[in-house]
Image 1 (cartoon, one colour):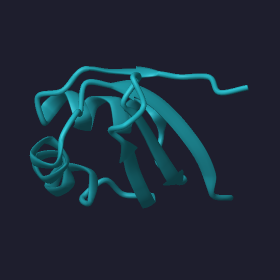
Image 2 (spheres, rainbow, N blue to C red):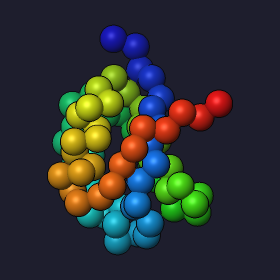
Image 3 (cartoon, helix red, strand yellow):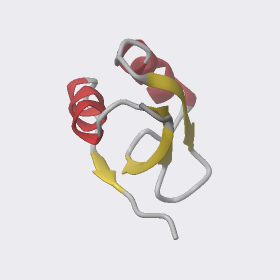
Image 4 (cartoon, rainbow, N blue to C red):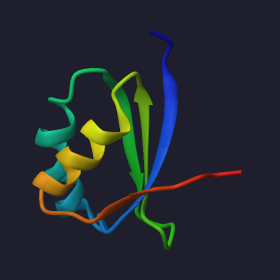
Length: 73
């Protein structure tokens, strides 16, 4: 399956939040690389890989954060 980029709006807004979610996102099968832009007002989570949107959303919610799929034009 080809790797793809997916974008999400979150409330992951600081280094401590990123550390919290790291253990969760690093365990999602199909996630190759991920990052959160805490400087962006939308706190954009970018995920590269072939993980499903549903798996990413469920994992971030399990970590205790809000997340919504985001369409970047």
